[in-house]
Image (tube, rainbow, N blue to C red; front, side):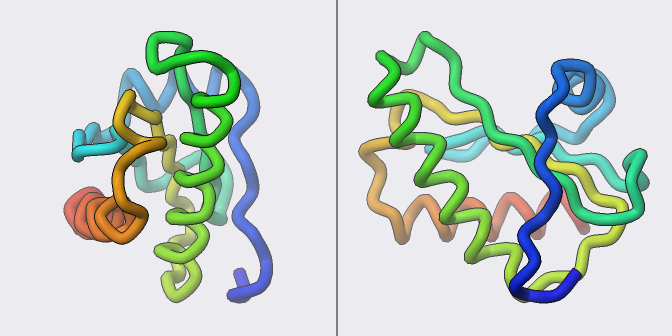
Amino acid sequence: MSKLTPPERLRQRADFLRLAARGKKIAKPGFVLQAIRGGQAGHLRIGFTATKKIGNAVIRNRAKRRLREAARLALAARELPGVELVLIARRETAKLPFSTLQGNLNKALAEALA
């Protein structure tokens, strides 16, 4: 995967459920990260989700946009073949300072992939 090539997206419910059941879960302020090594594909795959509990469609979409951008920046310099990630937005995702969100994501990735 080159730096300009975005990771493949997880879109099927079965993929999200598989990571929820077998993946390593790391909760940080702003999101929950679920990660699994040796996924079904040989390259990085990532999914984003936000439940209705965090707010209306505007708030959910804002939270997912912020998570997508933080993930893009955090994953640009990393080669992660066979890794699958799911980022789950929390209520504070849309309000948390972006630098804090980005720092928390970097810490969570280091912890999950160690």
